[in-house]
Length: 266
Image (cartoon, rainbow, N blue to C red):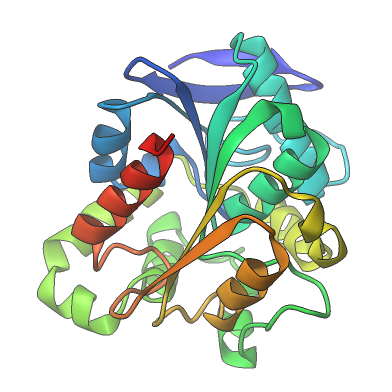
């Protein structure tokens, strides 16, 4: 599995397919193993699809730098440079959507189109998650195994109905999540970076065509956040998915064509 030197770290990445580049930016604690294979397959049939592990996650180095969403965006831009990619579509989910916002704001020349999934602008203007969910995110992980952590986190990503009806997919997801688990230290540093993130006052500067996808059943990022993004970003289109939770897995058959149609529009 390839790694490349970017800034002060080595980033682990994967490339699938050929064509115009699509950069896929993962969320809190996640890495390339976490992406739904159906997403990778669908996107790689149309684009040169690049997935990677954010700083501290998966097989990418941790480093001693103070984490911030801006730093993660700098890493993403640096990865593009290292791979010889001058311009690409950017798709980010959850914390990855926050990184994608910082990427397009600080490197507008690098982003053709923007896809923001299950994310928010952060700060005082955003709608924050419940105390119960925050409690789950900040659970002391030090005494838990990677599998125990995965089983605690899965219900935050998908609906209970989906878990009940697709137990084999839940087990597959857990197997993927424990392949290269994030350390407790790096996880908390990523979480703190999310907590201090805020782009609201700069969203009007985003010029790239933007697609916002949001599940109505999301408990991690309250769905109202998608509407806040939609109203603040000038050239945005918002699509809600009635039966989906944070991971948008419940309606993959609709989500993927929605993204592909948007990216293919001239």
